[in-house]
Length: 80
Image (cartoon, rainbow, N blue to C red; front, side, top):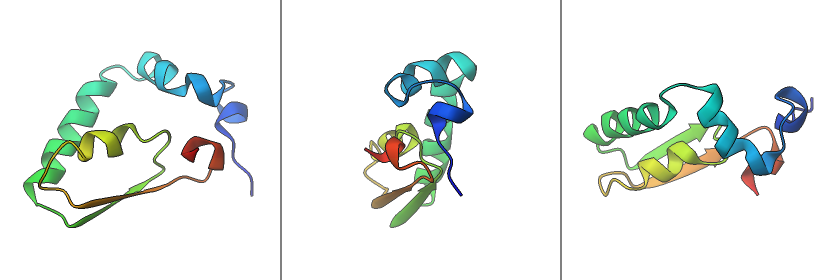
């Protein structure tokens, strides 16, 4: 099975970060809230499944309470 953001959303991977903020109202707030709630449990390892370009992972790593963040995405272009 092949899944590509460029085909599914009809956008280029390079523009994903900009476009996702247009498509999803409150995207930054969502990242901040999810990260803050996750940090409360002080996990040693977090799996960001469907990580896209890593926006959530980047926000998670801003919390020193969070150890390792592992990114997985079905679209290899998103992880480059």
